[in-house]
Image 1: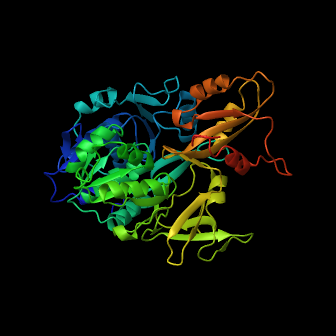
Image 2: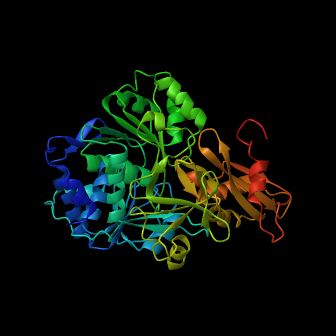
Image 3: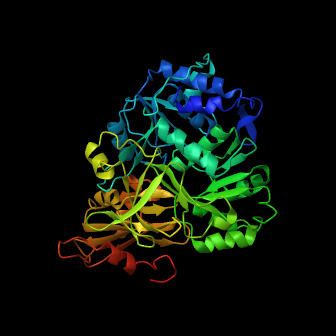
Length: 502
């Protein structure tokens, strides 16, 4: 049996040939019956460009039907998709190109890419134009789907490492097919569903959860270019499922037209990629009569846990139970023994959803995945007597701002080079809109150091979501006996920075 994820999807579309598969700007892009030919044209274009089995194709573009079709064509070709945040700067992308060595870069003309003619490049615009669309237009579709084993790679998603250099999580076809099957069961999807999709496709949430569930369920996907609260409210009556990050829900609650009547057609609101404040959970229920379903996942393992489908089982501040097939344990102490219920420790997981490791980073892989196959998530939390999971924090100083993962070491390396900066510590502090905000705490080599100089370098070298939302210059850092900066102390010092007091 062909384990290629595209083959898995297409096999589930029988009987739904006339149903719209993808809707963009209010119009159907294609039906499920037309989808194979659409993918086939993109596959034929990729073949002309020398994309073969195992080759990497980097996609750095905004949401569009072309993005989804390019991704599916890469997988159908037996190649490996490498989605990249379009907000990344040229220097950030250059590092990823050096690591992944893609044979092709598909990008929006407005996004920053490094100079040069390698790899080959084609443009992909949100309105459907670009050199990739021109190439596909006149081609006969290649309907073949490359035969793949479960353990063959489907995608590489880069996640910034604690060492400051991004690491590419290697997702296999098995990881993605098993995870979407588990979500289909847990969230009770069916071909009667339609999904309102306003998440970025370069992110695991938008690509591997929202898009995959539509394709696996033969459910129509209403794709938006980006989240727009007014558009979402207008479209809610025509769909059955909405997926978002906490920021989406706070934006919706700010609108007077976001009412119980506006949400009556929705059977499921899902939140993830960052912690959902209990206050937002409660306000949402009071406004709509519905409880948001919160879940927990990460790039390396896609979705790991979920609150129950039954509304009464969805508890604010918790992320529910491991998905079918996923094992989760909480460990602590020198021997990393499994801890009893209620005791906080480090979360480790194992299952068919777990990636194969990090691309060309054998040492990082060995550090993250133990001999018994359990992956060290870097998150801390605990399980109650029932096994329900609550996330307590992040052991590796990971910052999650607006649903995006930000690792301090990467930012510290960039900002430490600013003239006049002696040392820099990047921390995350509570923010009412983004969950957490990035703060740069700096010690200066001279008294006239201007925060504006730090801001300028951040704008030049860091994607917008990574740029500090505040910069504070301090005389010295709190440090332990070994000279390590005590970031927990800094987080406490600046915890109220965005709460109207300091």
